[in-house]
Image (tube, rainbow, N blue to C red; front, side, top):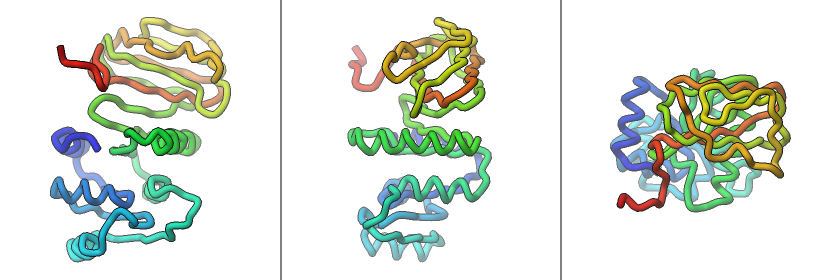
Length: 213
């Protein structure tokens, strides 16, 4: 999970929101004094005492069998889709477990197909998928990397980037979309077919794990 201050800042920025916790995500919410509207998953990371406390505070809990095909994050995201939101932000989805991170990235494909804006967010970057077109409100100098998600992407056009593209093709075997940079406060991505995975680093010229020196 991102640090508490970053989460609170994001929550205040977007005003009234519905909060869904995937299983153990409820522990992080409780640590920050946040009572989730819904906790969903197999609940193998949430002890019974905390579950009871959440119910008494008004949380709804949906328990699923441990032997299931869906990840807890997928269950939470599908429930969020049913709420017809303007936007979905997912916290705690980018971490040390590469397999879990890849699973969460793959969920962005379903989001793009539904045309519902979904972003995986932490204090360093945001990750989202583009099908059709999207605008990035950022700052010049921010690093943005683009990768095809699931299959080749054609008709890629980039505006407001240091390395612009016009009607280009991106394939899994040639990751040349890495480490581009924004040159404008409003940049645009357009795609004719396929889905692009976009990673924007919020701190220009800074990346996780680098020394402050």
